[in-house]
Length: 274
Image 1 (cartoon, one colour):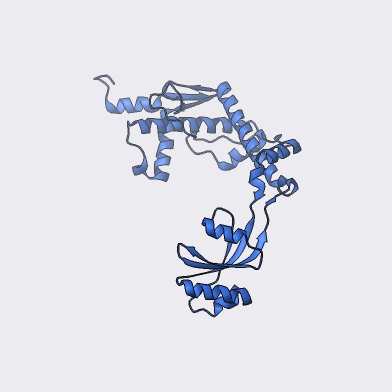
Image 2 (cartoon, rainbow, N blue to C red):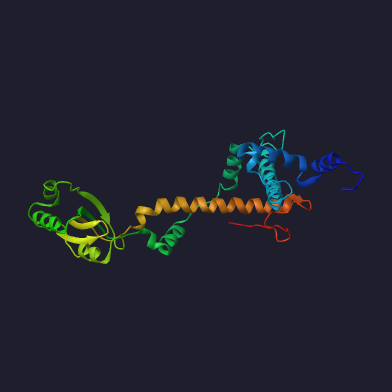
């Protein structure tokens, strides 16, 4: 700013300066100001970075790219007859974005080979560990716990526990790695209906009855193919839309110096996170 230029004139010139051109749409600093004001209203002005700070510059660069991508989507929607916004700084309606997304990704499909390949590569996700269901009681006194265990061998832990004041019978599903070594060895070495204990634990003496054993099982592809297909389809649509946006940016967008993406290596305060 020269000595003869007033701060107000400088701000006016900055607001009028072109930040990006998207097809036939010209975006200016004033559009960025308007969107930043909306962000401040939604997030609270006190949560915005200090003016002139590196964070503030990153925010404005990010807002430029938000406006640019909205303009790309809006231009595509307009080609199908959707009216354009009167104010390019106003947020684009979600239903407009949704319609363009659906149009751009309409031919995305998932094949049976892709589903099976995903299943084979991620087989560990579809394995259910061996699970053992316990009824258990924890008591502070070892002698009391020993008497409870002896009685439980005869009548079951539920009935035996009901005769012990303060005893609470709880049910837990247990897989390997969740209990201490001694308890795990006893529980996974038992058969359904067995009573184990007393076993020392962090809260006292454990007495447990093994109620049920569900063996390790790999879920068949037929049972999960629909869920896999849904996940793959969503991911492929997302990638297709990103590719379409990138192609349109290369074709239709011209950024002015100072409006580069916040993650551009040429930006001094570059920050790029995923």
